[in-house]
Image (cartoon, rainbow, N blue to C red):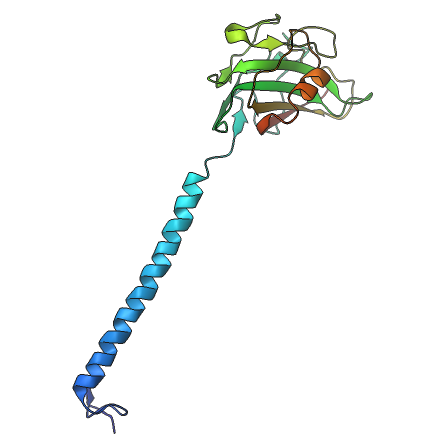
Length: 209
């Protein structure tokens, strides 16, 4: 029979055990077992964290020209100086050999309108400056295609009056360089990079008149 004294301590022989030595041995065994469970649980958490770190960060693109999903300043449109916005990216997938960029407007009245086509951007590149030159070939062998204004390089937003349009800047990480000459169209680039896309990142801005 167990009795509790005023100090909260247990006295007397525990029921089910022959003596206090056997009781202490059983308690020690249970304590070690619980430590094993806690250790296994902590190891599981460590493995999960390790897998998360080993999985790599998502491929990302951003611009300082406008907030993501925000309004594009007039400077970067046909109503301003029509220069391309600065773009930067990080965490490209392992094995990336080149980048391709396509900027287009899916809200155009006649269907998606292409504003910029750029490809064979060297794998070591992680940004494009504001006002990228509108010429066939850029540094490092990067080539520019023809937009739907029938011009080489960037052509900024130029929508009809009404609700603002969305403009997507889509960057593709590829496992190869594309066998295309300068002046290729969006369709040409999409066909050439089929089965070679390792990752895609995009940023969108809006503009209306």
